[in-house]
Length: 205
Image 1: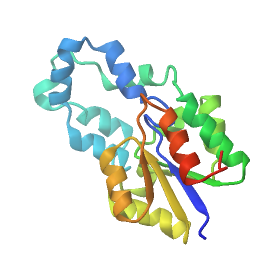
Image 2: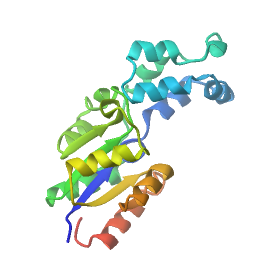
Image 3: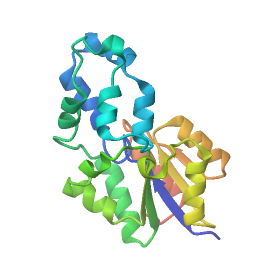
Image 4: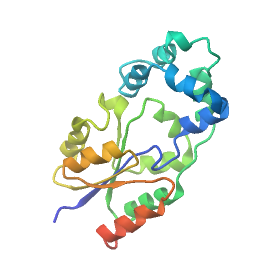
C-alpha cells in the first residue's frame, strides 16, 4: 500500500486570504466592481508565476482606463494585507497532527514572492518551515490547475497516495483527473476536512 502524501493549499485553506480582507478595509463596497474591472489580470498571473518583479506588477496593476479612478494603490494593499494574518486554526491543527504522527505533508500554493511576508508571522511561518516541501507558483513558473504543477510534485515525491486539499474547485478537479485523492475545502465549514481524513485514513489524526 502506498504511503500518503498530504498536499495542502495555503490561501483560504491554511489562512484566510489577506488580499480580500485588505480590500474590504480599503475600498467601499460600491467601488468593488470598478476594482474588479480595472485590474490587469495578466499582470497578476505573471507576478504569481515569477515572470515580473514587484515594481512591474505595481505599474501594471490597473488598466490605463482605471488608473485615475481613486482605487487603492497596490503598495497600500500590500501593506494592509501583511499587517496581520488570520490562520484557519482547524486546518493548522490537522497539519500539526499529521506531522506529529510522522506523515509527509507539503504545501502547494499559487502565490507570488509575497509569500515571504507570510513566513514572518511565527504561527504560520514555523508551521510551513516544518513541512516536507513548499511549492510556490512564483518559483515554479506554473500555476495550478496546470497538470505540470501536479507532475512536478509527483516527480519529487514518486509513488505516493497523493491527498490534495484546496478550496478551488478547478484545482481539485484537475488533481482528481490525475488520480489524486481530493478534498474541496470550505473555509466556512473547516470541520468537514477532519471528517474526510478520519474516514479515508483512520488514525491519521
